[in-house]
Image (cartoon, rainbow, N blue to C red; front, side, top):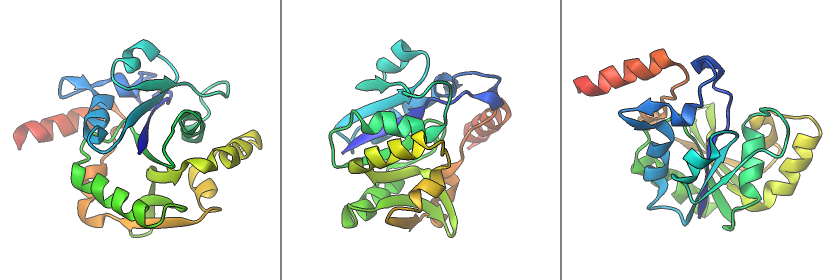
Length: 193
């Protein structure tokens, strides 16, 4: 299985910083996702829209959105699906550095039982749509969705066969870091424990 790690956002809530390269516990945030998935995947594709040489050191391949401007995570997913080789593709964001192997194993196990579906992590009814496994064959459909001006991740997912994997018992791992304040609070919390 290949993985697409999404690191192509504008980082607006971090003052325009490239979030994947923001240090967390003295390494770029994206490095946590790369290290986590290495044992599970054959190819690490990082979807980014700037600082490509820095990301290229961490992944096996980097891709940029084919659409102009920052068009959101679906554009990054589409760019990644175009270069992936596996039938199913794991998708993760760069800003959840607390993920552990047990969560990834649960997601991949469920995806293996329903390879034609999009498999998405959830807490009860709350979806975490950027923590998913999807069939690579959806790339053309996704391209048409984006060409039609659509950008909503969950709306696109819901028009396809989809299964949810409830990880309410592991929800603390899904803490995503959108601001420097969240980053500093989490680093302080981790250094105390």
